[in-house]
Image 1 (cartoon, rainbow, N blue to C red):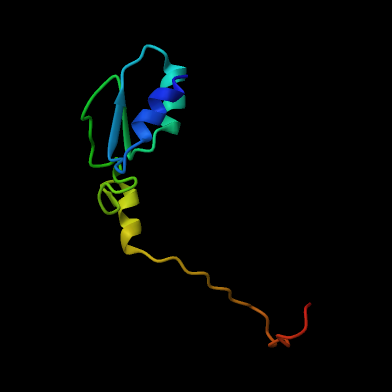
Image 2 (image 1 turned 135 degrees about the vertical axis):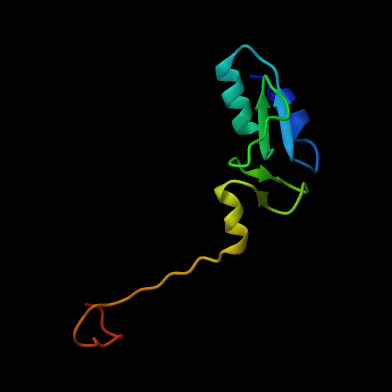
Length: 95
């Protein structure tokens, strides 16, 4: 694999998109995993879909647009624990 090509591509404060041309599918998968970019095009350029997340890595943009991942910018996760016990147990004693 061309670790030098990946190092050169990642040596930037931006990471909106990256592209490569290759006949080797294994190389394209490995390099896609290593590239720090929000979109990686292999043997194509500027392919987009409203169902596919589009957005930043590093200093490129502010979050994700499009796709299901876009909703996460508007959500906050929370944990809620509910006991269905009839009696309230002593919270300072482990069961």
